[in-house]
Length: 271
Image (tube, rainbow, N blue to C red; front, side):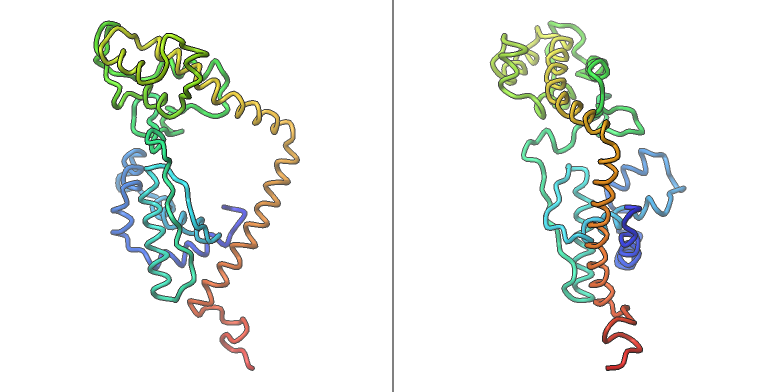
């Protein structure tokens, strides 16, 4: 964002289209304020983040934005800003469509501690760059059904982070490779629900699944870490392209708002 200053200017214009009460009603903002214990000491920049996000999206005339469930209120606010701007100033901005994951478990992955959301500040994340031993340690410490105290106890899979992660990442072929006792995840769930299946076994299977899923990502990341000058050049070139695109959008916004005073036909220009 800091490499594309046009986003800041767009944000400033959009701020005049959104009321304070509307931002306060944003469920994502409310949850983040509570999570960070801001209470009455809310930084203005943080408070206006949904408006800034609308600039991030509309600057590039995005037609579709893939998001998790927790970002739905942000996208809805963006759509409102686009609608309001176009209603007041004429058709200028593109209204994006929201794309949610088809896999219900991926709508919002909980943290490994069972809290509603993964967060860096809460330290309850599994990172794409985590080493195998770190992934295993985090998975083996994951929150599960608190009432599943003994192996023979019936357990709950609903709201259980271990099973939510399996719903999100497990593939049918992983059973033949890592847990041939079962043919599918539904069999594992049924066994856990009736009792007789311990959390440790399920977590060990989840660890194998996550190791397989994250290994190629981690290896690819390490390859790029050895090519940092190339990475910086890619970022630099991408930022230049992004800025050029955002600048064109900003020109259209200024023109629609009639504040492009010194452009052709603008204020003070003679024909």
